[in-house]
Image (cartoon, rainbow, N blue to C red; front, side):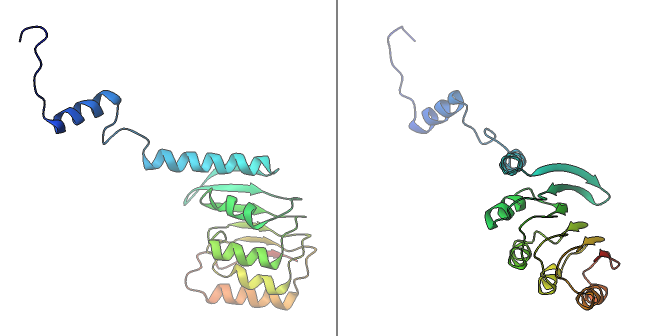
Amino acid sequence: MPVGQMTRVHPAAAALVAAALSGCSASAGKSDYEKMAEAKQAAAAALAGSGAKVQEKQYLIGRGYVVDLHGLTITDDLLREVKKLGNIAELDLNRSTVTDDHLRLMHELGLHALLARLDLSRTAVTSAGLEHLNGCLFLSELNLTGTKVTSPAVGQFKKAREADPRVKVKTTTVKL
């Protein structure tokens, strides 16, 4: 073709060439896994900014997070941020401002389901709050030292866990 002579290009072909040259294609951009990993990193950073300590750990059934919120002021937003991490296996709320209402929110968010260890010692949690821990499938350790939870409530909690067919760890060590 002589220099300076123009050729007609189909509009769809031109769009494809433009997209290819600009780096836009079906495979360009971040994968769902990369987006999920970034969201977890952002949640961990936000929690660290609130004074929390977050560590990812390998368990027999997979990876989970250990979240230390001891001594912190617990808010609904803080609990929602914890949920963004994904699988929470250990949660330390010792000496925090956690209440029965926060336990209710944790249950609603599904934050409690995979917990293996939960420390609620020296908090305002009461016997009524234990009902929000129903559905903890793997809970093996529960620390209630210095709370307003009674021995009869712990007995009912343990009996309910043993009867629940969804529960994988039937025996929970409870410190009262």
